[in-house]
Structure formats: structure tokens, C-alpha cells
Length: 88
Image 1: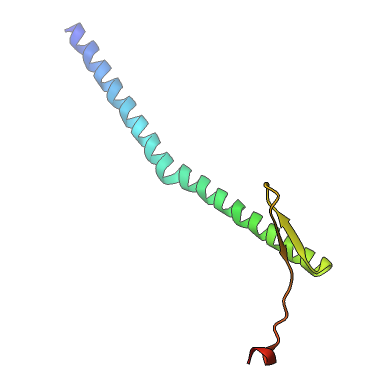
Image 2: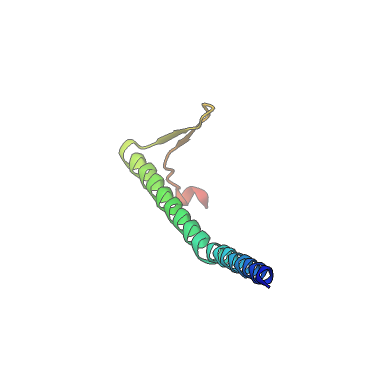
């Protein structure tokens, strides 16, 4: 009889452990991960805005912007004034 109580206690403990693990997975899936993803997206948007504002400021100050990638390829950005009469 004592052995049956011991086995029952182990089964109950195992079930409680499974429930706690499942609750942890659910909490991570529905609360923690979306919070982290939202934070990452927010920071990416902020970084995009900083880069864009930096490019626009340099364009206003120097009249052009030269962007070079890691391989050494370059792009030069310069403002273009469209002549509406020539377009017609």
C-alpha cells in the first residue's frame, strides 16, 4: 500500500510538472515572443528613420550623398529638378 502511494505521488508530481512546462510554453508563445518581436520591429523602424534623416541632411548640406557597400560598390544620390515644360 505504501508503494502505491509513492507511485501515485510520482504520477501527480509528473503531471504537475507537465502542466507547468505547458503553461511556460503558452506564456512564451503568446506574451514573451510577441513582446520581443515588437521591440525589435520598433528599433528597426527607429534605425530606418535615423538613416533616412541622415541621408536627407547630408543631401541638403552637400548636394549629393555617396553610399558605398562592403564590396566597394557605390551609389550617388543627387536631387533632380524636373522641368514641367520639358516634360510636356
